[in-house]
Image (cartoon, rainbow, N blue to C red; front, side, top):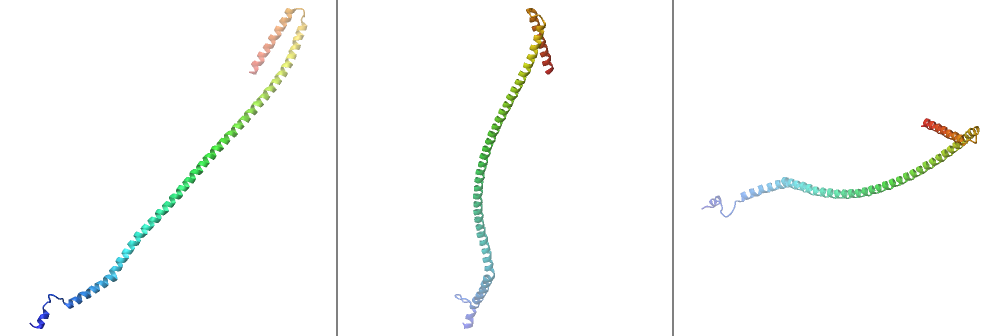
Length: 182
Protein backbone atom coordinates (compact mmCIF):
# COMPACT_ATOMS: atom_id res chain seq x y z
CA UNK A 1 0.00 0.00 0.00
CA UNK A 2 1.17 3.15 -1.01
CA UNK A 3 1.03 6.27 0.90
CA UNK A 4 -1.44 7.88 -1.49
CA UNK A 5 -3.82 5.10 -0.95
CA UNK A 6 -3.66 5.52 2.72
CA UNK A 7 -4.54 9.17 2.41
CA UNK A 8 -7.56 8.36 0.36
CA UNK A 9 -8.91 6.07 2.90
CA UNK A 10 -10.86 7.56 5.72
CA UNK A 11 -9.14 7.51 9.00
CA UNK A 12 -11.32 5.54 11.39
CA UNK A 13 -9.83 7.10 14.46
CA UNK A 14 -9.25 10.58 13.20
CA UNK A 15 -11.01 13.25 11.42
CA UNK A 16 -10.65 15.28 8.31
CA UNK A 17 -8.87 18.57 9.00
CA UNK A 18 -10.47 20.38 6.07
CA UNK A 19 -13.92 19.43 7.22
CA UNK A 20 -13.06 20.48 10.73
CA UNK A 21 -11.90 23.89 9.54
CA UNK A 22 -14.98 24.29 7.38
CA UNK A 23 -17.29 23.33 10.28
CA UNK A 24 -15.44 25.65 12.64
CA UNK A 25 -15.62 28.47 10.09
CA UNK A 26 -19.36 27.99 9.57
CA UNK A 27 -19.86 27.69 13.35
CA UNK A 28 -17.91 30.93 13.85
CA UNK A 29 -19.96 32.75 11.21
CA UNK A 30 -23.22 31.46 12.72
CA UNK A 31 -22.02 32.38 16.21
CA UNK A 32 -21.09 35.83 14.99
CA UNK A 33 -24.48 36.31 13.25
CA UNK A 34 -26.43 35.00 16.25
CA UNK A 35 -24.47 37.13 18.71
CA UNK A 36 -24.66 40.20 16.45
CA UNK A 37 -28.34 40.06 15.40
CA UNK A 38 -30.36 37.49 17.34
CA UNK A 39 -29.00 37.83 20.87
CA UNK A 40 -29.44 41.65 21.05
CA UNK A 41 -33.06 41.29 19.94
CA UNK A 42 -33.69 38.63 22.57
CA UNK A 43 -31.92 40.78 25.16
CA UNK A 44 -33.98 43.81 24.14
CA UNK A 45 -37.23 41.81 24.23
CA UNK A 46 -36.35 40.35 27.65
CA UNK A 47 -35.35 43.80 28.93
CA UNK A 48 -38.63 45.33 27.68
CA UNK A 49 -40.62 42.53 29.23
CA UNK A 50 -38.66 42.83 32.51
CA UNK A 51 -39.18 46.62 32.49
CA UNK A 52 -42.88 46.19 31.77
CA UNK A 53 -43.27 43.67 34.58
CA UNK A 54 -41.18 45.64 37.07
CA UNK A 55 -42.84 48.89 35.97
CA UNK A 56 -46.27 47.31 36.31
CA UNK A 57 -45.41 46.08 39.78
CA UNK A 58 -44.01 49.50 40.72
CA UNK A 59 -47.09 51.23 39.28
CA UNK A 60 -49.35 48.78 41.12
CA UNK A 61 -47.48 49.44 44.38
CA UNK A 62 -47.70 53.20 43.79
CA UNK A 63 -51.39 52.93 42.96
CA UNK A 64 -51.96 50.83 46.05
CA UNK A 65 -50.07 53.33 48.22
CA UNK A 66 -52.06 56.20 46.64
CA UNK A 67 -55.32 54.30 47.22
CA UNK A 68 -54.37 53.70 50.85
CA UNK A 69 -53.49 57.40 51.28
CA UNK A 70 -56.77 58.47 49.63
CA UNK A 71 -58.72 56.02 51.80
CA UNK A 72 -57.10 57.43 54.92
CA UNK A 73 -57.83 60.97 53.72
CA UNK A 74 -61.44 60.00 52.91
CA UNK A 75 -61.89 58.42 56.35
CA UNK A 76 -60.47 61.55 58.01
CA UNK A 77 -62.83 63.76 55.99
CA UNK A 78 -65.75 61.47 56.80
CA UNK A 79 -64.96 61.63 60.52
CA UNK A 80 -64.63 65.41 60.29
CA UNK A 81 -67.94 65.65 58.43
CA UNK A 82 -69.66 63.48 61.03
CA UNK A 83 -68.26 65.65 63.82
CA UNK A 84 -69.34 68.79 62.01
CA UNK A 85 -72.82 67.34 61.38
CA UNK A 86 -73.15 66.48 65.07
CA UNK A 87 -72.11 70.03 66.00
CA UNK A 88 -74.60 71.47 63.52
CA UNK A 89 -77.37 69.25 64.91
CA UNK A 90 -76.55 70.29 68.47
CA UNK A 91 -76.41 73.94 67.44
CA UNK A 92 -79.76 73.62 65.68
CA UNK A 93 -81.30 71.95 68.72
CA UNK A 94 -79.98 74.66 71.02
CA UNK A 95 -81.18 77.37 68.66
CA UNK A 96 -84.59 75.72 68.35
CA UNK A 97 -84.84 75.50 72.14
CA UNK A 98 -83.82 79.16 72.42
CA UNK A 99 -86.43 80.17 69.81
CA UNK A 100 -89.11 78.14 71.61
CA UNK A 101 -88.23 79.83 74.90
CA UNK A 102 -88.31 83.27 73.26
CA UNK A 103 -91.66 82.53 71.64
CA UNK A 104 -93.02 81.26 74.94
CA UNK A 105 -91.86 84.41 76.71
CA UNK A 106 -93.35 86.58 73.95
CA UNK A 107 -96.61 84.63 74.11
CA UNK A 108 -96.74 85.05 77.88
CA UNK A 109 -96.04 88.76 77.57
CA UNK A 110 -98.68 89.12 74.85
CA UNK A 111 -101.14 87.12 76.94
CA UNK A 112 -100.44 89.28 79.99
CA UNK A 113 -100.81 92.42 77.84
CA UNK A 114 -104.12 91.20 76.40
CA UNK A 115 -105.40 90.26 79.86
CA UNK A 116 -104.33 93.64 81.23
CA UNK A 117 -105.97 95.47 78.32
CA UNK A 118 -109.12 93.37 78.77
CA UNK A 119 -109.20 94.15 82.48
CA UNK A 120 -108.69 97.85 81.73
CA UNK A 121 -111.49 97.80 79.15
CA UNK A 122 -113.74 95.90 81.54
CA UNK A 123 -113.02 98.41 84.33
CA UNK A 124 -113.71 101.29 81.92
CA UNK A 125 -116.96 99.70 80.76
CA UNK A 126 -117.95 99.00 84.35
CA UNK A 127 -117.29 102.64 85.27
CA UNK A 128 -119.31 103.79 82.27
CA UNK A 129 -122.19 101.44 83.10
CA UNK A 130 -122.13 102.60 86.72
CA UNK A 131 -122.24 106.26 85.59
CA UNK A 132 -125.08 105.54 83.18
CA UNK A 133 -127.00 103.59 85.80
CA UNK A 134 -126.54 106.36 88.35
CA UNK A 135 -127.86 108.86 85.86
CA UNK A 136 -130.81 106.63 84.97
CA UNK A 137 -131.51 105.81 88.61
CA UNK A 138 -131.46 109.49 89.41
CA UNK A 139 -133.84 110.21 86.54
CA UNK A 140 -136.07 107.29 87.44
CA UNK A 141 -136.11 108.29 91.09
CA UNK A 142 -137.14 111.80 90.12
CA UNK A 143 -139.90 110.44 87.84
CA UNK A 144 -141.12 108.10 90.56
CA UNK A 145 -141.12 110.91 93.09
CA UNK A 146 -143.11 113.10 90.75
CA UNK A 147 -145.72 110.38 90.25
CA UNK A 148 -145.91 109.63 93.93
CA UNK A 149 -146.21 113.27 94.83
CA UNK A 150 -148.85 113.69 92.19
CA UNK A 151 -151.00 111.12 93.99
CA UNK A 152 -152.09 111.16 97.45
CA UNK A 153 -149.50 110.23 99.93
CA UNK A 154 -151.91 108.69 102.41
CA UNK A 155 -153.18 106.02 100.07
CA UNK A 156 -150.65 103.20 100.41
CA UNK A 157 -152.48 101.02 97.96
CA UNK A 158 -152.32 103.69 95.26
CA UNK A 159 -148.62 104.38 95.97
CA UNK A 160 -147.88 100.69 95.71
CA UNK A 161 -149.76 100.45 92.40
CA UNK A 162 -147.86 103.47 91.03
CA UNK A 163 -144.51 101.88 92.00
CA UNK A 164 -145.54 98.55 90.39
CA UNK A 165 -146.66 100.33 87.22
CA UNK A 166 -143.39 102.29 87.14
CA UNK A 167 -141.31 99.10 87.55
CA UNK A 168 -143.32 97.36 84.79
CA UNK A 169 -142.71 100.39 82.56
CA UNK A 170 -138.92 100.14 83.25
CA UNK A 171 -138.96 96.41 82.43
CA UNK A 172 -140.71 97.13 79.13
CA UNK A 173 -138.13 99.77 78.28
CA UNK A 174 -135.30 97.35 79.09
CA UNK A 175 -136.90 94.59 77.04
CA UNK A 176 -137.34 96.97 74.12
CA UNK A 177 -133.74 98.25 74.55
CA UNK A 178 -132.18 94.79 74.81
CA UNK A 179 -134.30 93.52 71.88
CA UNK A 180 -133.12 96.36 69.66
CA UNK A 181 -129.43 96.01 70.71
CA UNK A 182 -129.38 92.24 70.11
